Image (cartoon, rainbow, N blue to C red):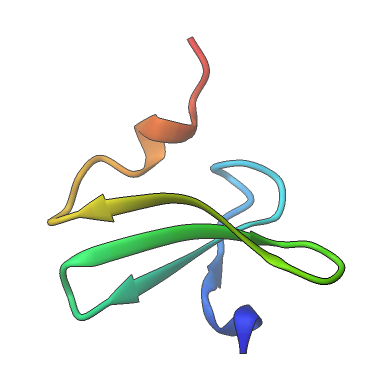
Length: 54
């Protein structure tokens, strides 16, 4: 079920977002044989800005 999250290629290529219990946002990427968790955001933190490079 790793493809359950919403694709967010606007953040970074291959990134998917899943909301867990209305409080935690999980940003992850699916590879050939793994699910790579990129970041966990709690209570509405600014998710898009975490993926933009300065």
